[in-house]
Length: 110
Image (cartoon, rainbow, N blue to C red; front, side):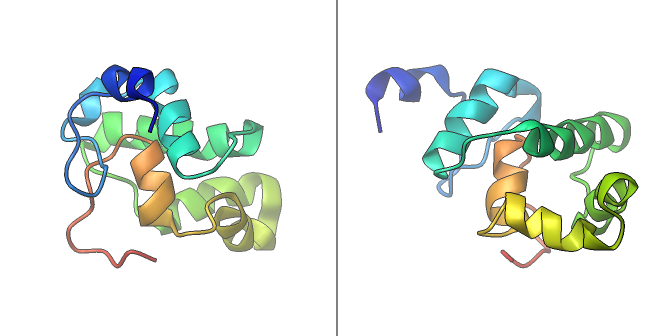
């Protein structure tokens, strides 16, 4: 990774998740997305911002079902499919990481 990008990122665990979600900002999200080979568009940001709002309110990462319900307002029955189109390597692996969540312990990596 580019060393300039590396120095911009707060402390992360061995898998690349932020240690402290409060350290997150949208520039960090862009950097993390680049590491995941994703270019964030409006649909990504809609999901990520929802996840951040959920975290701020509940102090836990949103389960995928909550994000799917949120996306359902725009995509209806296609919401689950859309989530996995946006984050093709999985909700936990990509969406949670890019949104600055800690690695969810009890969830699968799918």
